[in-house]
Length: 241
Image (cartoon, rainbow, N blue to C red; front, side):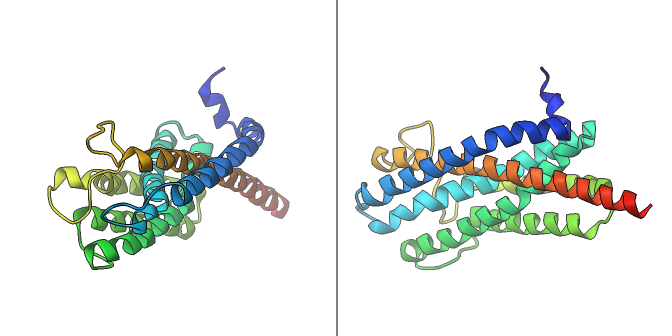
């Protein structure tokens, strides 16, 4: 069995229809359990107080927002190289999810930053890169809507996705490239000296796993919708002919 078999829309619909309920249920269970664990069974931080618990929403949302763009990049490259329509539609399907996660990241970041930094917004390298990534998401969706021919739209949005990947990288590693700004380093790290305290770390991992599963479930759902919409449009076009 080859991975590329699922570039066939029929096989993709069959597989996604089978696994979608499992991803959805496990995503819900992990998000709910992780949030309950984090919000109700972890202490307040000695510096940040209860405000620190915003990380259980902010960090997973920002993580998914950034990595969603990388998933779109891979799918776009597959489209450009192999011309598999499912990959182009999967990239398109991921964009609205990326927008939603970016908005959640920006809003929760502002709510977290105001009491910690004394300001809702700072033109910090990481924050600015994240905001630009959000604008690329909006531009990506707008470009899909503006170009009538689906293949041309897929080509142009794939190129845009490659360009926008620069800001996805900066959103993740800006604190490494520029040793300045208010934003802290990554909350998660393989280095125990750098990541948050274990009492916050483990419930955060659970929530993040749930957000990743939620992202996968929503991408599968949206891609299925895109395929069905494309089929319906083709049927209408044939009837007109």
